[in-house]
Image 1 (cartoon, protein in one colour):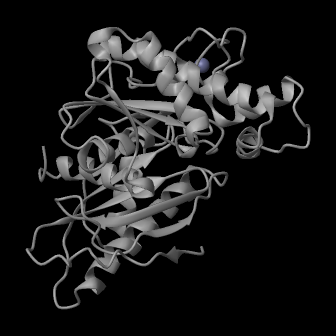
Image 2: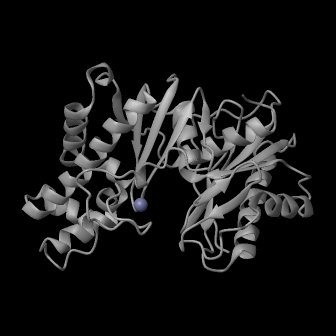
Image 3: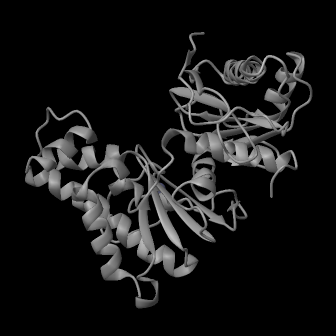
Length: 340
Ligand SMILES: [Zn+2]
């Protein structure tokens, strides 16, 4: 397996107080990335990554995850050769609906073959024990939940009591963090904003098979689909190019971009009325779009939300790719009794 290691942030100090470290791991459909994280959420070493063997089956997946965790744990001992760094726990953010209590995948898309039903916590724990790392607690949660936990802890949601997180990219996900704890709900799907029925999306097919949901109009692939359906240039290959065409003045591209943002703004106006968060944090590929997307989002939200809720800020996420690593690490710290 090829693994590449990114340089560590030189501003991060070395661990010196003897407090235990955990491994936070972000498991995506194409690659996985992991790092050592301390009790303050600071990365203590480089981010290591490797390709996800997404279609090789659950055993290959668990082997790859465990191998990356092992590599990162070892880098900790190399980091400070005079003193072995104790690893207190492992935190994993993964695609799919997760039963966090048991560390199992309840359901997942075809992005990872056979992932549904996989006992991730147990499988990783067994492999790490066999590799000589001892019996470590392994925390597993949905990747958007991990992202939200990271942003709520140390990113755009720092200091907020209630954070609503929305991720808009190849799909539309979300999570709800209250007083630092991710609320997963009675059926493990709390915060999943993508499948909220929203005016403006009527008749648009959603990935879940039901028409009229937010994801069916707001996600990147849906923006591309609608661009083509409305008579846009058939040579445009993806949503990113639709974005470029919109910026260059293409009417159809601008329309489908506006629709995506406006429907998100409308859905948020409804959701905040129920949740009343301090802040809404937006991540994902669309969050990196410019005013073309953010302006209709904020305008529609402002036009539809009730007056007492107009101070709610809608802001881009700030931690970038480390957010799910840090968030998963926070869950691991909680499991190890090192954090609330
Ligand atoms: Zn849906």
